[in-house]
Length: 210
Image (cartoon, rainbow, N blue to C red; front, side, top):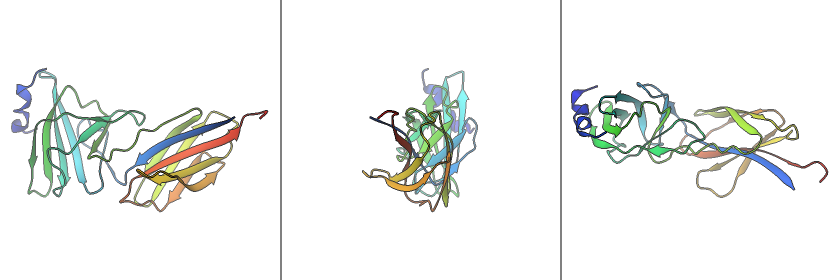
């Protein structure tokens, strides 16, 4: 880590039952960098990687966001979470600077505390949604690429035998059904890269005796 990056840090002080889940996916996921499990970014931001280095003496973390182009500034949000069921938390930047006019540009800043422990990172405002899990359904596998979305789930209620897969554009009011299956997995081919989608898997049935 460059010594200049640590300068601002050293000044810091320490009827029917309905089941569903919803997840917003992004077209590209990136990984790499110390302490960074998985990182992604808004459409339009070409992310090269994120590194995070914790200084236990000063209880601060130095963060570097590497990107291509000029779509990242010191005010661009960088958010973190540890699980798909958690809300995203925007990091409070200290001493943020952008080194530009390079093949790979760098947003550098400091964060109070140990940010290395965060497993998921996102650059920009279009953070993937929290996975909402109600009774019975647990998502076990979710992959989104430029050409498909693949998901697998478990359901602990034997009454749920048919599952409906739906999607909608982020911010839209209505859902579009893209498939119905009696299996515990689904593959959707034709994912649109430049748009953000929410996905819902549901099983609906009448309670016995009704």
